[in-house]
Amino acid sequence: MVGPFIYIFRFLHNLLDLKLFPLYPLLFLSAPHRVREKKQTQMERNPFVLLVFLIVSSMVAAPIHCKKQTQALGRFYERKMKGSSGIDKSGFKAVHYINKSRVHTQQGMKEKDRIKKLPGQPGVLFQQYGGYVTVDKAAGRALYYYFVEAYHSKESLPLLLWLNGGPGCSSLAYGAMEELGPFRVHSNGKTLYSNRYSWNHAANVLFLESPAGVGFSYSNTTSDYDNSGDSKTAVDNYVFLLNWLERFPEYRNRKFYIAGESYAGHYVPQLAHTILQHNKNANSTIINLKGILIGNAVINDETDVKGMYDYLASHALISDETANGIEKHCNFAPEDDSESSSECDAATDEAGQNIYYVDIYNIYAPLCHNSSLTIRPKEPSVANFDPCSDYYVYAYLNRVDVQEAMHANVTKLDHDWEPCSDIIRRWGDSPSTIIPLLQELMANGLRVWIFR
Image (cartoon, rainbow, N blue to C red; front, side, top):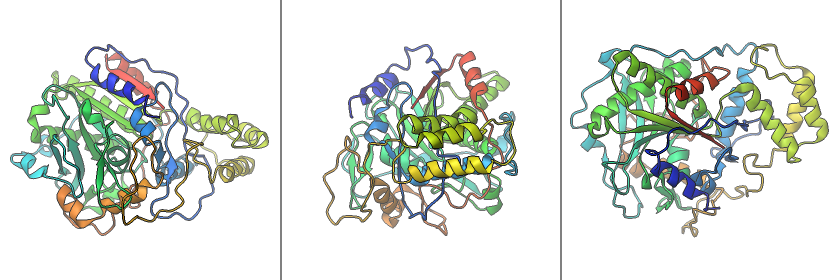
């Protein structure tokens, strides 16, 4: 299980030598189009990803995702594919002008954000930071970040931004605490152990909870939660980067990469496009973007959803009759805005019931059967991932001492930190395909790697 991890290290270490990663054909595994939901606990989980090109080791070491994240994507697809959804599915429209008033002085903020030590943390030699960056002062909108510098050679290694998807799920929950971050949470929900496959062995890694309403990120203007969408997220992420680089000026000219998974298949290329456009408008390198990586990426609605059912059928998780019913009666084409037929609904409902107790992103993985925390930590293993880890992360990040150490929840939110947001109520725009953006990025010489 651990072996493939070496590929991501080789990749990150060799970023400077590689010209361009090809865009491999992608068969994305989305959540089912129509899955009958069960009552959720706070931290249900579903396993993570099949791989397209190479298995990224952090994903192998942590192959299981919280079911809430897959359900977030499943529910989103269900809404999006209804003719009455109101979601704009046309091509991504970047904002080509950012008012300079949204970039603020950051003097003294870096040192305020320094994390001396996380509760229960083992000793480490790298620096870590956490805090808020205001992206809209008038609205009181601020995004939370967690940043870990590289174990070694931090002055020369690239800067990498990690984004989780959902939409509405936390990069702190998954990327930082269960996949590629430096620590994992013990089963007691109180202490941490080291992830020897952390990506900050190869880069300085920045985790961002985005958009506002996700994790610790917030807005004092609650209507912001009704106006989320791809375009607004791209703008806020770009403004975040401008301000963050003011706060950490030593990274301003550093080679920069954006990575993410799932619905970040939208976020990552859209942010990359926005960076390219602003660099071109300014006729200078505002942000030194060199490439992107996206795993299990949502990039093309029609093939994403159809590919899911093809996978289920080819692995005997649904019957031939159900698969044939989906093939015959379901139309996932983006230009089809009509409501799905009763035959399609029946077939997809049947598929949902068949996979109800199966981790569809790792069908051979165990499930979490006891979500209770333990008094004494279980023997930890990065290679053999604990399927109940979501519960441990939830408990840890909702501790007052942890939030204080991380400089998080400074406004005392009226809700718990959650791995996926329950307060983002509407999503305004989500293009049916991201492929044109990927083609544009490659045409501009950026390295593009898509894996599953």
